[in-house]
Length: 203
Image (cartoon, rainbow, N blue to C red; front, side, top):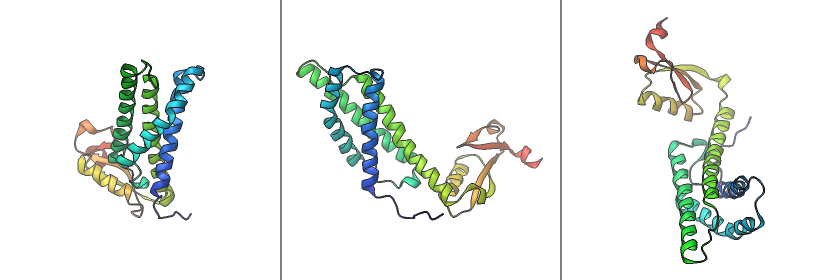
């Protein structure tokens, strides 16, 4: 199967993130009011929506959530998304306080909606990137066509080695297990890969 090597244009990633943000906003409203929001709450939500979308778009641009190469998504990308989403949600809370104390003593949107939107947006944006990464790696180099290997050492260097193998779609290798002398690590897993004690490896 032909897999394009070109990276997804940044503007497409940006639009996808905006779509996720919009979806999260309305899903949060529906969940908060058990899929039957009162007319006045829905009116407030629609009134605030352009402001919400503007804040999210600005935060994505400032935080450059669209800048990473999706098929190489890392923990750093997840952290960037977390802080960008969190910053926008905090700003919504501040805007609520400003309106309540200095305008008409009414919130733009309930804090529960802000919280639900934060969780849903964070999960959806990170999951979408991980899903694309996993799909790309599987299509580029299916597990069935790879050679199973083990890594000696389940410490930091072993984890770095595993990640280097996973990122290199041309390596033709699949990390099957870790072997380590530390009995405390035996039976545990690192990123889904089991750790075995060296004595078992000799059996």
